[in-house]
Length: 242
Length: 242
Image (cartoon, rainbow over all chains, first blue to last red; front, side, top):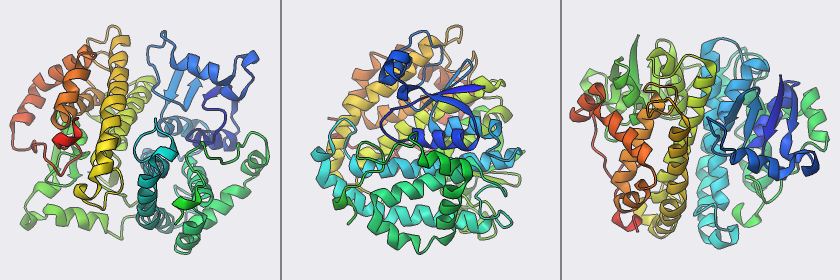
């Protein structure tokens, strides 16, 4: 199967969780909107899919994975679909349900990270909601990040015999996503993360282990990895880091 | 299988999407925290599950479904698990993926509905974030609700031969959730909804069709259905309805 990923070409965003799975899984894929517009790529290709009136099952928003006849939107739905196919989740139902549950909790954390800079509306600029952003970011840093990361630390701790992985005893798409969350939070909230990480040694070790994996390391060193920036979900605004 | 649902006993909240599926699916289930504490119920039972150090796969937050040895948190994960077992989703993979994708988009809408009254922090009272709430609610009413409901209207329109249902041609857990979203938005934003509903005749018809289903009608008329209130996700604060 050759996959087509449709996502914004200038940010990691939610698409990055899918990119990491495709890379680690060794999938053949095209990151469509990063191809030149002259070759059928660019944002034009993404918009044209979103506006395609012929789709019986239209996606709501990117990321969107095209897999044969299927168009799958929603990051966690894409990963639940890809997981078994790319051998990035154990085969038994209980483990697949568990991985999905963890991924949805990661999605909640990612939503909240986004809302630190957009607490009022996605249609406004950050500069138009800075006062509320400072307040929301304070609660996110002091209450939410410790609660979420403490939870994932507990998940790793209780997975005895799991060799440090979150689900089963081999790498899964959940581990890749946890790597991305730690990397993103470090980028956006470096000061807060230095404090929080002291309580999450297993999660930090997992981040490092994923980062060193052969395919992931090659991906991170390539031009396919878009750098973090201030258009994505994890943004470095020092005033939001306390 | 006899299921145990763990959720806050005084609100519909996210648990309601699971309750509706259990009811329509004719499942045997106990809404644990609504049982008397003397019978092992109450919030104490919920807290004790959340704090159970013996769970190898600890849930992050309610709702939590106990199904045999499994504890499943995250509404969409619970519904993806229950759907096939309660015959509330077609059997083929493409339809299950599609239902999951729709449910996750519903979850995003529900998160945004929650944040209209809690745009800064869940740990603060509404009264401590009223100014930001007014602003966020305005964008939600004017931009987000029309966009989301317009999308679901399109989904229903494109499901030709679907007899008005969202997935396949029979009722699915997605339809039950769409019913709940319409009911919740009507409760919280009655003025805004009167305007938006004019553009969503199929969605309104789906709401009515679900409401009239035998098991759902019996549930809604029973004491098991908790009324909407101002502790839940959909809250009637007139100042947020414009």
